[in-house]
Image 1 (cartoon, helix red, strand yellow):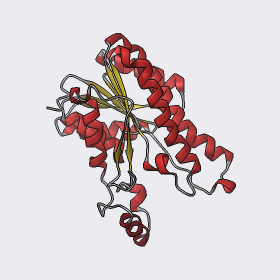
Image 2 (cartoon, rainbow, N blue to C red):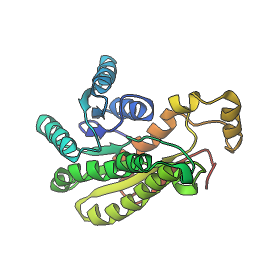
Image 3 (cartoon, rainbow, N blue to C red):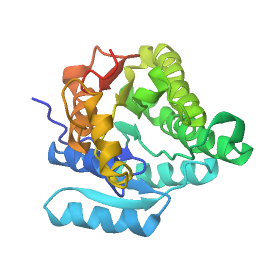
Image 4 (tube, helix red, strand yellow):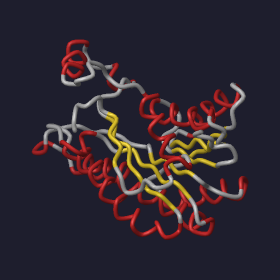
Length: 247
C-alpha cells in the first residue's frame, strides 16, 4: 500500500521545509526523487543527505521562473531516468504587505514564482506524462488561497490561481491517465513561522481547532497519498491540511 517503487518524482523548492519533507517521504515509499531548487548547491546537499539514509535522490539546480532552464532540467532528468511519474510544485515565496503599499515588483515576483512557476513546470513534464499515459501533478497551494489574509494579496492571488489552474488542467489531461490535484496547507511549523514572536505563533495556533500548527510531514503525507495508485480516481481536487482552520 502506498508503494512508489520504480517511480520518478520531481519536487521543486526541495532543499528545506515542506519540499524537503515531501522528498524524503516519497523516497521512503520507494521513489527516486529529483530534488530541485533555485539554490542549486542546497538542493545537491539536501539530496546527498537523503541518499546517505539509503534512499534514492539527486539534487538539481532549477529556477521555476526561467522556462528554458526548467525545460532543460526536466529533459536532463528524463534523459537520465527515462521518465517522470510525479511532479510536486512546491516552490514558493512570500513578499507581504498591505495592498496599497505593495510594490509592483513584489506582486510580479510572487506571481512569477508561485503561479507561473507551477504552470511552467507542469507544462515541462506533460509531454512525457502524456506519452506514458500516466502521471501525477500535485501543487502546493495554501489556506490563504482559499480564505484570504490581510497583507498577503499577492500570495493569496498566486495560491488561489494554483487551484484554478489545477482544476482546468485536470480536465484537459484526464483522458491520458494523468491526475492533477492540490494540497492546501494551513499554518505549518516551518522556518518562516518559527521566526515569528511566540505570542503571534500562539495566537495563530489558537485559531486552529486541532490546537496546534501542522508539520511539514503532515503536508508530505497528503502529497504522498495523492501520488500513489490508491489515489488514481482523485483529480481536480483540493486536499486541505489545516487542522479544520478552514472547512
